[in-house]
Image (cartoon, rainbow, N blue to C red; front, side, top):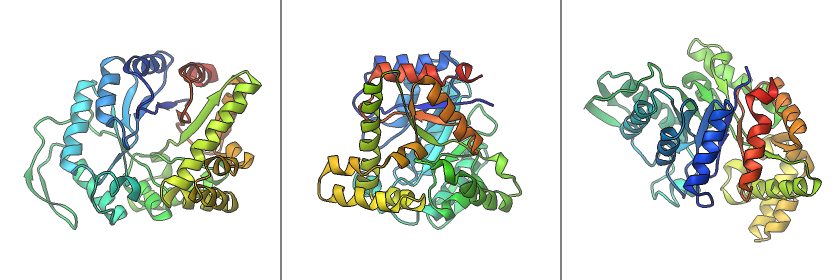
Length: 338
């Protein structure tokens, strides 16, 4: 299996024409799925509708929408509508996001993300099946809800973006796929053991859960451009560690980068963005990103697959030029690796 997904930053720095061109390119060369993230910019479902209306085969995935800003009933209706529009190509990627987004932007309390995720998915599964939803839970109480327009897929895939040990077990227990970010190649086997614990609770094997990490990629034949790409990657990682709350700082610390993560956070807290980026070591880049000429990038991606991932989702650091995105799409396309 040589499946690969693609995710593009759609916050503000890409036009509709460029977005459609990138999606069509990925569709033409055999990419499995197009993943749309959501934070402060454009919403994921509108972006995926545009992509769906301009492609034929590539699957349309939310990567991710958070579990706080919409009710589970609304999510079920929206993803089912996307599945109908796209003739059965939708994938639902969910996550708790973090306090910065949930409270700072959506203005709702960031509480009990683990329990809420479990209940959220339970309701969505039932709704998507077409069965009546009568739910008396801790977070939601629903009566006589039933979808009149169910999805085309008999079982629409649900992925969870999880980081912590308990959330990993929940992912293994209830999800079709795992969507981590900044996944250290050296820790994949250990983290899959946590997935396996959860999978066993629902009578499944860990192989039933697709491991689909976001991998930041940058491809070029020019040494100068690769140095620029490394700078973009360092800045992007520093933003996550220093500027996105505690989740990613803790994630990098658990991954064996405690000293680097602390240096990044300290510099970021002092508003020294350049120093924060410089604190992202070569070791971090080598462990969590794909950087090099086309063949080097294919070889690095193969190492991630050998370490235990099923479907990488290629994405790009802020500031990546459109030409580099297209070049990387070609370099990592399934045909290129066969």
